[in-house]
Each structure stands twice: as C-alpha cells, then as structure tokens.
Amino acid sequence: MCTGEGNFLASRKFMGGVHPPDSKEATRGLVTTRAALPDSLIVPMSQHLGAPCAPLVSKGDRVRRGQIMGNVEAMVSAPVHSPVDGEVASVGTTMVASGQTVAAVVITPDEEQDYETFVQIPEGEPCDMVRAAGIVGLGGAAFPTTVKLHPPNDSPVHTVILNGCECEPYLTCDHRLMLERPERIVAGARLMRDMVGADRVVIGVEDNKPDAVEALKSVAGSDVEVLSLPTHYPQGAEKQLIYAVLGAEVTHGKLPASAGALVQNVGTAAAVADAVELRRPLIERTMTVTGAVVRPRNMTVLLGTPISHILAEAGGLSADAGRVISGGPMTGMALADLELPVVKGTSGIVALRQNESAPAVYGDQACIRCARCADACPMGLQPFTMGVHANRGDWDACEALHMLDCIECGCCSFICPTRRPLVQLFRRAKHALLSRGKRS
Image (cartoon, rainbow, N blue to C red; front, side, top):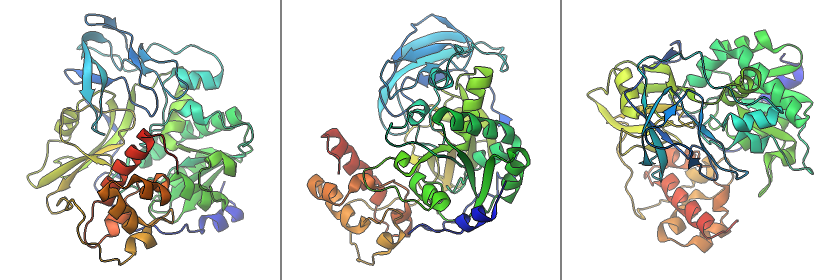
C-alpha cells in the first residue's frame, strides 16, 4: 500500500545528482522474450564480488542445466551453475567486462533444451538456499546476496528496501520485470524480510514508471509498501535510496544495516523467490539490449552467452553505432571485445551512437574549477580535486579525500564541461587503494 507517510518520504531529495535523458522509449513497452540458444557458452567462475570459484568439471564432462560447475568455501562468494544441458568443451580463462581475466568453462549446449527443467538446489534453510542458488545482486554490483542477509549482530535490520528505481538511462529490464512478474518480486521481498527479522518492506520505484507502481501495488497486500520516488539520478543507489525512504544517512565507513536497512534489487528479490520456492539456481537473467541496434529488445539470456550473439539477436549494430557498453552509459564498462560473456551482473548492453560516444581526453587536462562535479556528487565529495590526485597516482591524497566513498555513479563525468574521465580515474585509484589494503 502507499500511505500518507510514504508520500511524504517520497518527496525527500538527496544531495547532488543529475537528470540525464532517460532514453528508455525504445524498450520500455517491449515484452521480455527469450534469446535463442548460442552455439557455445563461456561461463566465468567469477561472476560476483569476492573469492572466485574453482571449476568442478573437466573437458569432455556432461553437464546438466542447473548443475554446480564451480564453488569456493569463502564467505563472500557464490557458486556457478551450468545454464544448459551440454558438454564441457574446455576449461580455461576468459576476460570479463571489467578487464579482468578469470577462470571459465566453455560449454557446447545440446541442440534441444528444456528451459522449464533444471537440477534443483538442496532444500534447507532459506539463507542457505540463496547461497546454494548462487544469487548475487542483479542490479549490477553482483555482491553475494547471502552475505547481505546476515547483517552484523549489533545492527538489526528493521526495513527491507527493494530498488525498483532503475535510474540508469536506456535500461528497462527491471521495469519489465515489475510489470511481468510483480508477484515474484513481492514474494522475494517477504522472504528476505523474514530471513533478517525485519518489520517493514518498501519497494521504491521512480515516478516515471507509474505502471510498475500500479502493478506492484496490485499484488503487494497490506504488508508491503510501494513508494513512487522522484526521478532523480542516482535515486537507486543504496545510500540515496535509504535516505529517500527512511530519511537516514549511512555515515562514512558504515554499512546500510547501521541505518536498519537491507537494500536489494527487484530482480534479486525475484531470484530469491525462485530459489526458495522453486529450488531454482541463478542460470539466466533478464537484460536490455538497446541504443544503436536494429531491433532493441528486453531478453531473458542464459549466463555465459557471448555478447556478439545478443547483439545479433537484436538485429546487429546500426550503421551509426559507436562504443558498446556493458550496463548503462552512466556506470557501465565500454567493451573492447564483443565475444565476452553475459554474467550475473550484466543488466544490459547499450550501443551508443557515434555522436554520443566521443571518448574523453585522458591525462590531466584543464579543470576550470567550476565545481559542477562537487554540486552533482551525491556523496558530498570533491571530484575535481580527486581527479587531479588520481591522475598523478597520489594515493595518499586520494585516501585523505575519501576516494573509497565514491559510488562510481558517473554524475561528475556527466556534468563536467571539459569531459574529464573522472570515473575511470577513480576506479583506478580505488583499485590501487584496495590493493594496498587501505581503507579511508
């Protein structure tokens, strides 16, 4: 339900942010369809933040759809399952969109596939089933969901918040999920509420998706609130969503649980419901393919499907295509190789047109000190100064400026009049800081 209190909370505005064109008109009205079976699948053993999995299969092995193919005992991890019935063609490595090279299993699928059947995960405690299903955050972060379902003992969770904002331009797969499977989203929300012992469930949706708000409200019942939030990028970022819903700030160095909140994507919630109620592992996901393609689409895609196959399903690239991005234009990664595989965190493939994708000029180019990036930063940081020190490799200065608080939302790069590659610089600096064990 949507209460008077909810309407008040929905008017709360976080600091900073921008209003990029949403560019969703090409796919927001398109029903999700299944992508055709590719000739081969490249299934990375690291599709999550945390410890990579070790392959459990060898060349020539037969695998079944839903069978575990990779696992690791580390707490921050998630097992990897076969998306198809088929034969292991090779076990080696592959590059993923981030540029990392990881272990991977290549599968030649059987020509006939039954997409309604799969090897079920073991029945057990709900949290254990979420882990066994290999579920990670499907909004793009790919953090193992089971870890978030075990908040610290000194930070009890009172509110489960689902992110249905989908504030990233171009992407509409979450929008379609809210229209096509709202009951699975609500079921997953209730399951996670019970797992963490919360009292309240709130689903936040940006107000440019009124049909999704109505679809969710139609199945929510009296125990699930659906809030229509202002369209304001990055409304769906974890800390900004907590502020919009609860009016609480997650202070520097703290987890969302410190504010009594657990935030999950709506796609993650649906996957949790499928895992607990159907014993279904995470072996496919919905995603948007749009931009400079012949036939933009929302598709259900097997994990491990080559991006070239997905683009072919969308009719191929248009003549005016420029860069191809995994994810959306604000937070995604430009792809150097279109044979890279779809992974759990791949929310979309966006082909930018040539007039949209002129590359930023690298190096310490002129910063005119306009401070627009500081005004736009939703974390209250100083991107113009951070960019100078990151470009120089001055990691101590980056740490002092709280570089690790950057959420890589892209607001600073979007608003910068001199097109400094700020997000790329910050990613490099954060990697350097984390590699040397620093925490700001």
